[in-house]
Image (cartoon, rainbow, N blue to C red; front, side, top):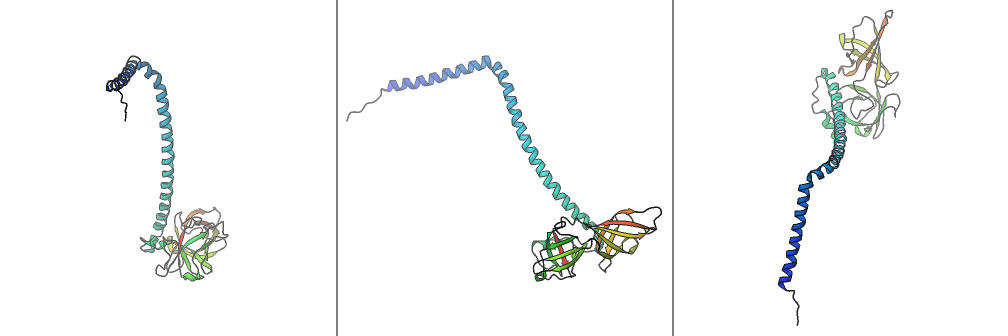
Length: 260
């Protein structure tokens, strides 16, 4: 069978030409850049600077939004922790160890004689400072049971029960009247619900009370009910009006403890 082959010297010549051509082009470009490099750099510099500026701007914008989102999340988390710590500090008179009190929130189970419940609805979805809880009679909840914050303060009483749900009527419900104790001086008082977690107390004008004073429940437990926020007194009045507020925001409650 007849086979054709390219002559070896012709193949080598073609390869050598390619190398030579590439070398010439490289030298030409190098020469051009050497002689005109300054001009090229001057012309291209504004373009490169603009490109870098745009790139940095987009990177900075991305970093700004990423950092802002992170800071907002951290701020919300810290605010929640601070509020919880403030409530705990206000409740220290109870003398109870609440270091692991939130562990019971991982699953519903009795904490001694307590039932942990989550809050399903808040005012204004429900009227008159009434909250709906996701624990009911099948969980051991009964009408008249007291409801507490995990940190200790008492909120109100169970007013209605169903199989899997119950209603919590807060002591701050408008028109509600309950006995209490002004911690300063141990003065017995009547605390009137005003709605929205607010209370009103009428005291003789010479009764000592200051903003920040605690209002306790009248029972043996002496649970924290509210904190004095404002005092109103006219020069001619025989009584003064004391405004107090629940130690927590009732519109953002998530978990509570229910006890007989």
